[in-house]
Length: 485
Ligand code: SAH
Ligand code: SF4
Ligand code: F3S
Image (tube, rainbow, N blue to C red; front, side, top):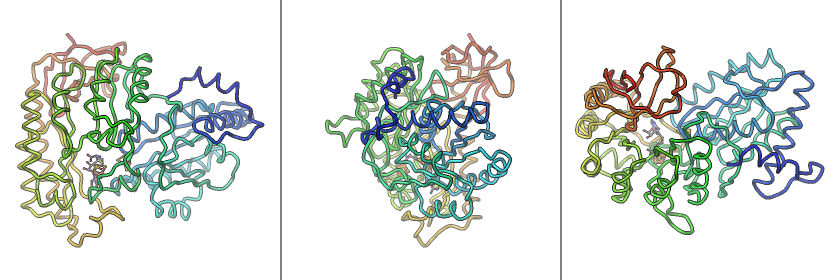
């Protein structure tokens, strides 16, 4: 992360008539200055500022990446907007399920119709979907109006790619298959002033048999603790009170560092940073959630009372086929250990229904775990066949109709369990970080409890970004209505 003022002073030293440096991030600073020239020239020609809009699909990792894109766009001289009418629209895509891909294709048609009306409009596609050669091929064939395509490994080179886009009339495509480096110190523009995600690691080594993430995000790489902690310190100075440490499997953080460090140790150090009041993390793989982590959570005043612990399936047989490396019993025993240490914790999970070979009996096992683990919430997904993953090649794929029937059964139990679970907070006083003015009723604001449950209560916009105490007066299943104390 680098701030605007530091970057401005770096710009004054950069000579654009010399060749761009070969080292990173210096090379990108050079291209950022260059891209400012292109953006300014075009803005002068049009007699108005150029606007840019990023649209994010997928997970928190992608949201954080979009903040990096936004930071670069802003420093390149674009005015950021929420509207896809913008002069430059960037879709940061997800490919974890086919539905995510279909959404992108659907919206591209709509972007094309806007581009016909605004000939200066430029369109970029990046993110996980672009790491799939078949996707890039399809876009080349059928969506020729796209100006720029890049992948997850060269997001840091966005300034350079913006320049190439301005210099070329044809589609610029730059997708790398791997990247060992972690390029630090690029600009970031946060969506929320008071909370922020922080990447602690990139990629994934787990190869769950259904999952495409390891193929599109590459091998696991941890950021150095000094870089992470210094970023958190900067964020704190900039007014951030809630942070979320991000990785596909935070529990294996630090294993491949020159000086190995555990995730629990990183959390303990993050906790020391003044100004940070809440710490969250995503995602924890059950197979390597350590007793040390449970202890650190238990003893912490800042780590939120929430753990997202993806189960995927409650059937040991299916878990083995999924390559998850835990059994139903091991998962339940882990839940017991967590609840023993932190009795009021909220547990949430991810579930996949319709994995190849899944029977009604397997689905019963999943339902059994939902009831016994008492999840506060669960994201339930229909299995999606991802080309190139081992599960896609399995013979016993489940017909859509049968999977849907099982999905509905699971969802009903998830909703029933969530409602009963969440009820334990009714009438309590809890602290909430106010995130926004309520979308439906402007006399209300919306806050998030440490337990990751939302509460809506009467309040004015000045509360946004503050942690306030609320009484939870009405249980609506996944959220509460409350009143400020
Ligand atoms: N790294 C995280 C998950 C990232 S993907 C973890 O292991 O917990 C988020 C969720 O998408 C997964 O937990 C899983 O439930 C779901 N998912 C992944 N691949 C899927 C597929 N092929 N079909 C349906 N859901 C899938
Ligand atoms: Fe996918 Fe498994 Fe890695 Fe999560 S841990 S990203 S589900 S391969
Ligand atoms: Fe999707 Fe990529 Fe995240 S595939 S879920 S955006 S890591």
